[in-house]
Length: 252
Image (cartoon, rainbow, N blue to C red; front, side, top):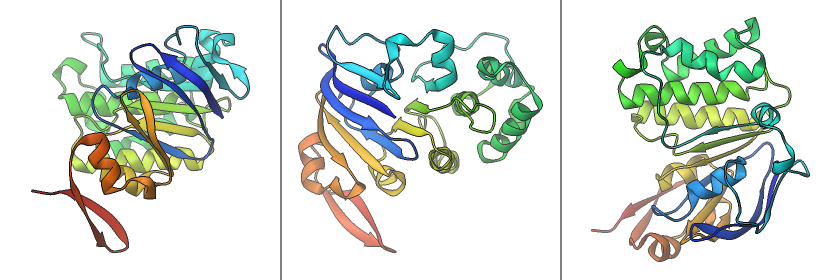
């Protein structure tokens, strides 16, 4: 479990307190600049909290982990990644396997399991600079998942992704969310920021809604109401019921 206690980044996010529990998919929503990326970076141990607040993984402060230990316990997909020129798709995935000791037979099986849902096979032999943004994103997602795949990494505890659906077509957005649910069901604490509120309500076990650096709401998807959306996003929506699911659409 990852615990945040009064986590603060001055001018960005906080104070925020809460926990990301194993076996659950938590999705972060909120307007641009609401603090989602800063919160995820803090949860990954990639930023300072300006001396305020604590972040603990399984009871131990993140500052007490070495970089190698952090790489074994958690993986983080950041929003903006500079990819090395000339690297091929399979070489990028091999980098994701480095904390696991390299490309073993078990790692190859994990890559094969990811290849179908993310449509990776046509991308392996191509240089990254020849791929579209969405194709690059699918490889980056696969490399991040590979790092904490429970089948290859028994030390894995936490999976963090900052806007993993950015640049993906609808098919691969849904495939990615299904994969994240699957990793949560295998015992990881999985946390991701996304912008599609309806998808968040459909797939999340828990939603954290951030507004101006603070938690405006936290809980089951039912906490997302038209009143909350009007307050946080400044958009009026109407709620429709379809096959037992709530769908929110902006009013004209």
